[in-house]
Length: 463
Image 1 (cartoon, rainbow, N blue to C red):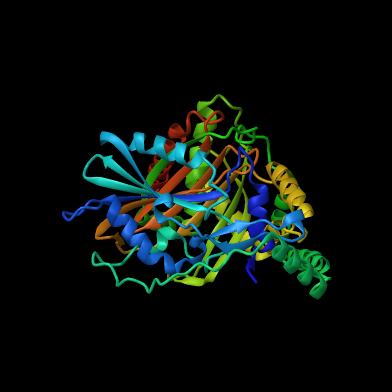
Image 2 (cartoon, helix red, strand yellow; image 1 turned 45 degrees about the vertical axis):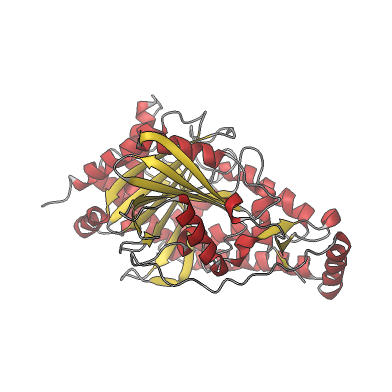
């Protein structure tokens, strides 16, 4: 019997429409080695590594009548060269031209009749560089335990590791009659699946309420954040199908110096920097900014131990009011640190994850309606998504080419004009700003303000 999509994975398919493609992306920039880094070499590399990501040779097939969630089946006509594509910038290609290309690639939805991923080799970039752009549907990457194609193509040495055993024969695709029969059999075997899903989500909610009620230190701020709608913002508008993309760069040592000088965490420093950038961006637009102006961020963050090691592949999601009305960068940092500490103590991360659970009830028809309702409701909960995922602090390579930068591309939700992805790699901190083309023609201005905000906060650190 084929694997059935989980309720959460299927929700990403149901959430998708013409303005909100649900793929995550990445932009990796490489220094070309003397031996070269061309399309054929990239295709060979990915073909060798596909055994590590079996979902990348499978497609999603719906069940007739939507009697159950869709299933994963092997693509009988899988063609790696359909998914690995080649693009080129007019030499010498600039970063701005690369970002425009990324925006156009990310605007296009993936083909649901094929495995839900694409990789683009971008040639012609100035200063002997090559870029690789990845797109993977969120239904494919079903948690931190499932690697993405951009991960498995990388090595810790310029000498690639040996090829993975790759003898693959596609399993026959089930007929529509078989899909219906399987769905009926599952319904007979587990008639209480819907009830269990609802009960599970309800139990999570009860547990969240108890944790919040029992946390004296962070009770007030956590309840206030979750219970009140997000403030009005130019980021919450009807969005178009087209995107803009911009980047900002910083050094990890800068955030560590800020942490040593003022306390908090590196994550707190990142959010404080973004608070300062968003403040200046609002002012540049002539928006009214007072001492009490805030922006609500939904901030899913990788949970790591103090030494930087992963803590069991966990992600905690927080609703954080960014103090964009505060002119002092150190006070902004203290506000963010206090809010993050209060949310962690109060169990606010569980509350945010419960909101995600509610978008995923079992029957596909209700599931689609619930996911879309959650999407339209999200603009009342937060103004912007900020993901911050620590990356490896050692150089990585693909087919002998050293990766020098990596920028995440986080998809937009309905009525969300901006998503910001942050990752650290080999001593650098890289910000990827994915924005709606119509609502944010000045996203490159905001990206420049991120770097200025880093400098402003660093100016408060004694030498």
